[in-house]
Each structure stands twice: as structure tokens, then as C-alpha cells.
Image (cartoon, rainbow, N blue to C red; front, side):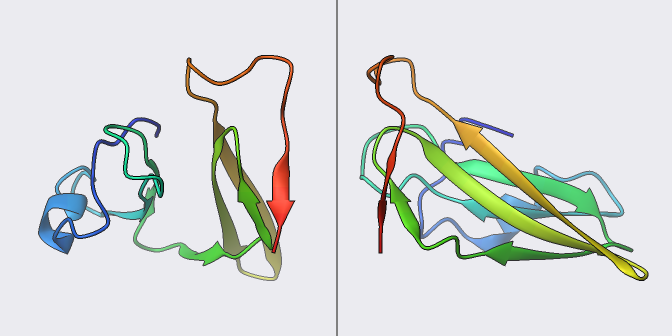
Length: 96
């Protein structure tokens, strides 16, 4: 999900209200203080999902990486949102 409009101090109860019964949400708020933005990953409660630190700070997009563990396999999912006002010819992140 993109454009969550939730701030870093949004209570967990509000975050969980975006997920239907039997599901959980992992949220990554927009970090630059601007209105809107933020990403979320909604998954079934029976799946084990872990947010991943990717070692970069996106400068022209938002990013939420998740590791999803499924029995003996692991899958990495990445949600990238590029706001409309971002430069179209630039797509990079700063390594931290």
C-alpha cells in the first residue's frame, strides 16, 4: 500500500485498523516530515513478515522491504513509491 498518510507517532491501533480481520500491517512512515506518503505491507497473521533494513536512504522515492518466511523458504518483497513531484530522470538512494 502506498500513500498511507500516517505519521511515525500514529498509534498501533490506527495502523491495525487498515488490515482486515486475520491480517497484520507493517508500516513505514514518510521520513521527511511532508504530508502524505508512507508505505505499508498487509499480510495474513499466519505468515511471518519482518521489515528489512536495506542500508540505503532513498532520496527520490520511498521504500519498504519485507522478508516473508514461508516454511522452508524466504522471499524478499520491496514496495517502492515514487511521489509525483520527484524528478523523473533521477532514481537513486544514499548508502548508509
